[in-house]
Structure formats: C-alpha cells, structure tokens
Length: 294
Picture (tube, helix red, strand yellow):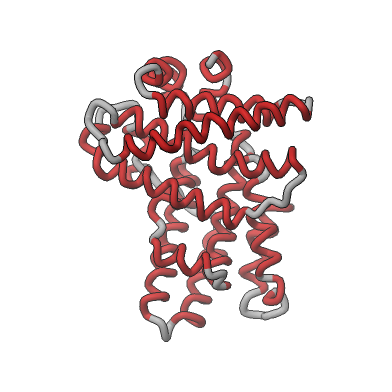
C-alpha cells in the first residue's frame, strides 16, 4: 500500500487533475471494498516486479500480483452485478486497475519466466475484461458525472488533427475493407465501424495523450469484430495491428504498457507474413511496423 500511495498511483493518472484522487481518495475507499484493495495491491506488486533489477525479487512480486489479482477478480465481478451510486467510484477505479493488470501481467510473466508471450490472446482477454468497464460506464454515467472520473468519458474527449501519414494508413484499411468484405455486408459494416473507432482513438490521442483515448477502443469495439479476430481473419488482424501502434505509444508513458505494443505488432506481423508480398496488403502492413520499430 505504501508503494501504491507514494509511487504506483502516478502511473494510473490520466493527467495531474486526478492525482489527488488516486493517491488519497481511492486508497481510502479500498479499506471498505476488498476487490479494490486487492486490485491496488496487485498493481503495486506488479510495479515492483517491473522495476526490480533482481530477478528473484521480480518473480516473488509477480507471484504476489497473481495472488492478489485472483482475490480481486472474483469479488469484483460480484460487485459489478450489484452496482450502486455508493459503490460506482470504487468499481470504476477497480475496472481501470483490472484493465492495466491484464496488459502488464502477461508481458512481465513472459519476460521473467522466459515464457512465450501471446499478445493476441492477452488482448482479447483484456477486451472481455474491459467490457465490464463499458457496462459500468453505461449504468453509472449519471452517478459519475461529478466524480473524479468525469474526465475519463471517451466520447466527451476532444479530438485533434491527424498527421497525413496516419490518415493515409487508416484510409488504406478502409480501401482493403472495400476490396475484401464488400460482398459480406455485416462484416464490412463491422470492419468499417471498427476502423472509424480507431480513427477516433488516434485523433483523441493527438489532442491529449490520455490513456482513455487508447483503451476506449477495447471498451467500444463490437463483439462481431472480436469474433472475427479470434478466428484469425487477416483484415481484422491488420486493424488490430494498427491499434498496437497506439498501445506502443502508451508504453512510452506508462511502465504497465511498456513492450506490449511492440509484442502485439510483432506477433500479428508473423501471423500475416504470407501476405507481405501481396501488393494490396504490403503497404498497410508496413506502416504499423515502421511506427513501432523504427
């Protein structure tokens, strides 16, 4: 708890406006809500593991993080089903912590345990977890309006102008969607909606580098798209690869996202390797690779 309240809390702040809440208000709420307390302890343990130069210490705190995460997730799911005005802030705070743990824990486990990291599976799991956050946002929107989380509303975040290269890369995705999915109306619609949401994420992040601008994609992308992604459909993988560029940007600011964007882009590049010689696909694949690894 000392680690969280003196250091780790800063890496959950979207900007300095919510620093006081993450450092003081939310830890105070945690003593009345076990799911939040365990989530915070898991997050602080992960932070220690991520920043330790001692591999034995890192492994010890990874185990601690897994233990507290397990304690948090079960009671958190129960709390979501019993959401009230009195618990909405604690549940929303825990949903943010659960989200970043789901990104950080697999990467750190693979790094310190010398395991193969499978980011596609990790991120589809993160999508499932973040859908809980979507439900919380929808139900508790009136209650959160004047809370510390009012600036986490994805749809109210301002947008900025995209640079020509990013704009062209997203337009290439639209062109591929027309070529490949035009005869399947439902798939075309799903892809188009997801690409437009991705464009919105890039433009919101261009205005303000707030993590909600990036993680909002996981909250609002539709199940139909994720189902296609799980089936390893090439265009859906390519769209997800472009979101990996944004995840990589988070890694420059937050320890819990460091390395995850690169790992995601690299894994999808391998999945799509057979298409790298196709003149329709190659330019669209090159941009996220160049943005992530150059």
